[in-house]
Length: 286
Image (cartoon, rainbow, N blue to C red; front, side, top):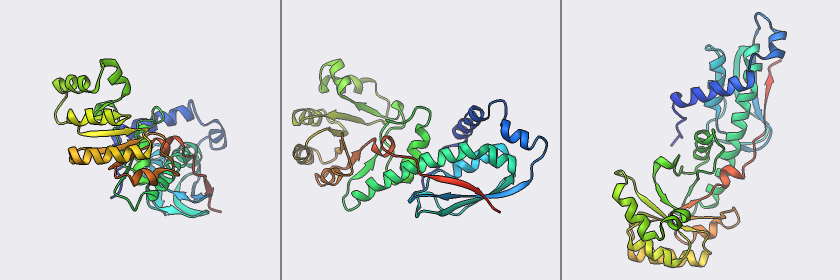
């Protein structure tokens, strides 16, 4: 199922602000080259390394904000894995538009494609297991909605977009009030319907306490694989309706071992924090 791009109500303002950041009082170089009118021309983008494409519809919007009648044709689909030197899109518009919008548009697609590429690697590593890959809130400030979009394009599932998306009781929350039991009881008094409660646990004793307090989701945080197996067995036996999430120091080396424990979800920030930009360039037709 295709990942929907963010709402124009959110996206257009972000793109407008980022264009303003880059252009400022004007594109001095391009404005001097074309002080009045610029010719209509064609260009294309090419990826210079293998990777998963993400962000082309967003890049199109960048150019549309600069020129409403720009012509754009995608030569690749969002989430498509492509080989080096593949054309991914063609564009036709004023030379001035293409030169001024190039950097922001490319920056976004390079960044988002890098995330999608990394996410795909993690998803493919556990494709033979029931566990699903989930991202986290460890994102670049101001870019979360797009970085999580790219994570979804790569095949991951979005965890909370923000603190208002759900209740997750973490170690510092537990420490702040004294215990898992007290934290859950306090939250249940005022939590909005129909939010669920996820609780972070680090050992089997905390897992048992979370089960007794009827948590909806139990996170096994930074547990050894053998302890995860014991925790999964305990939770399935006591309450099979509880969802189980594994988290903490997840890598491509150990993710299969984690999936083998039988957890429902594996969450990691690596798809975003450990990804690199995919190398993409714009070239003009000759």
